Length: 130
Length: 371
Image (cartoon, rainbow over all chains, first blue to last red; front, top):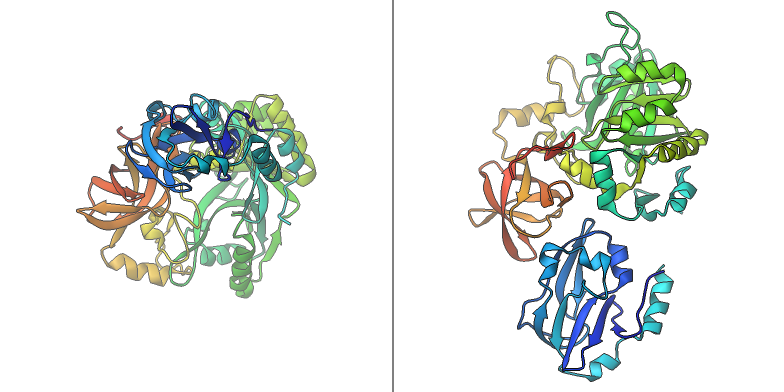
């Protein structure tokens, strides 16, 4: 059974978002998503300064099997990307909610966060898939 | 519902992630595909390939039929047990072509006796292959038997033979110790060939459905790691082996699919399906060639990505992926004959530097291309 920490919210396309409390949020993919993708071998993050819209494809993770788009859960400007993933994309497999974070962006529409799934709702969503 | 092999429950018990593949529910991995890949390169792995189908062909004109059906020539194979060396059976890799010279499928054929053969067909194309075989067979009237009663395991890796031989019948062990690559032997319903699809040493073992679970478990107990279709694909890609329906297909000539070496042109009087079309192609300079590609930047090559040369699209990836052994991305591609070593591959709108190389990328655990 995949972990779904309750200290963040989730997109139905399997990204998590954590509000950092300083006007920015951190985005990664869920444990369920990394498990389904298998061994990750490449991450193409967004570029710093990219202006993203909610639900916009903005990054790609590639496993040995296939490439998958990553969607920004909310609108905002990319302010930081996880450079560690360049050499070690497997950080996502090992720690999807921690060291495997993908990018940080400014929160331009706080109301968009309320539209994302709670841990409980996301847990129900993936239970149907598992 | 998708077909299940006799090992379905064993796969679940081993923690397999099952996926649909060619009409079958098959394990794609049992946790980490990369670890499974390394197990085969460094030690021993076992694959359930029972979705592939053995088909036995015999009869007084079976040899004539197969010389007509296949682009490679079964007359090259010695008959098992005959002089001069009382050799065991030999295997032949061949394409089965259509009249236009396109590849319907690739297969391995084993000679079992004077007019007795076994083919092993790909899972996704078994039914259509058999329809084609039956249609072409009529004038030769062979006995064609689809062996749905048989399962198949591939035990692969540098330790594969040492692991498997003690688990096989005592009466076969001396023969198995001496069995040369691309040879096979059998006893009762157990058929063992020193063949495989990984670029490593090993056996492919065909046996009755009701015996396969025991052998599978004994192999795991002896240290063989269960491996899924994911590792099978990265291993065969590193080994430079073609995947049916991807690197080859009914619309494409084997001459531009890296399979020219499997066509037996001699003797010239042997008529085989597709020969006339291939003879015509052979007279013209080929417009394309089949190559290996190494990506020089970060990214992952995939089937269908365009190859760029002199700022023009000059070909297409037929297979691509991440090579766990090289820790780089590699692929197979069909490119214009003019493309030279340095080229680019377009990945999601970005052009990344790549280099043509000669497959295989990896064989018997060794990297075979300059990095």
